[in-house]
Length: 512
Image 1 (tube, rainbow, N blue to C red):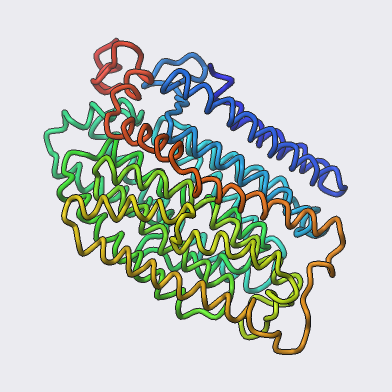
Image 2: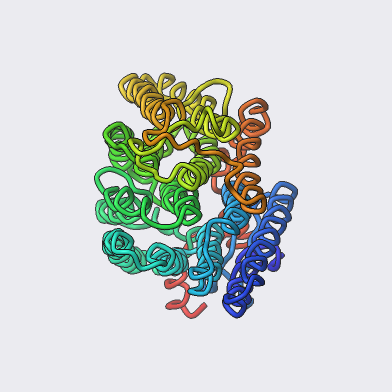
């Protein structure tokens, strides 16, 4: 069992070492592709195991929970690892034509693989301290990727990125320290029972808010999101795509995990805060997108607004709402990463990402136009694409509990999303190029064209499959939501058949 859980972490780390050793030759980039493919296979095996066995867990070094390092996978963890594998493979293939030899020699592929390892580790860890460790792995590798190339705008964005994330880290560590002081354990399954025994529940709520802020920075929610649109438009398009697809979702995952498993003692307070945060995040994100005139900046602000939908599902905290949050997470990773990949091709053949400086893509590159419309329509919620079902579930969940105002906001933000997508379409694809250039995919070398378009087309097909055949994906999200709202199997699997609800520290102090 251990290797099934550990291999999705070990594979990208091993690939990172090999890619670094061969970073000055073509072997490095192909090792990155092979490593990403191996990660996808390992994630598929993990998913098959979870579907067959339910929640699975492994104790590293044979130290039983809650004292050792626990790796655990339920349906949510497993699907996030699978999506990481899919996105990682798509971006590693795209990078064959997007990353130049100088950035490869500086270690792009090694940093990319370390980032994948950090993301997977965060999804599979079973305790809060190791979640902090994986956050740091992600922060270091993502900062390296962000400033790779050394341009002034990259350094400016990188400083903003790392500064606010360090604030998040400090808050996270402070919260971890307080929680450990109150319960004597950091194992998340053990905490599920231990927090119920805390006498001062008010202090627990304060700690919960600290975690909410720390993870909120990672997820880029209102009002902590400004680092994202300030930095995501600066690195290579491969880097922007993997950031857009995965990094903020780790923050959302951490919020869903902790606020369904640990911090559930005062839902009326904590989840009301989350509901307001969700509403403001949706509105401010889409307004920011509407105000921008750069392809990548618009997409960056859209990340913020779409994160609001996912937080909405957690905030409503009903079975249907959690289903919507899980479905939205999966759909959005695919769609958003793909839109950034399309932006990279548009820049490559049209010369810029500024909307005022490009145009004519529909006439001269109609295939690229179709590949843009699929994720763009899905992001906006056009039926029957995946974004429509995700928004439909969340709006219905809101109406079911008579939260009409947040349902109205969700619908209005969807309309604004259509407006900003139309803005990109009108300027970049429909209007003739301002300098008379006729951007064409045939201007790209055949090898580059294949490396750039195959991942985009594959992700577009996946978006269509989810949209046209949503039943199995919704059914999966329902099973995942049921596990999140009833974590008894998660707790029992991590702690053994006789769960130890008392804190680990208390047992140690008792000499057990």
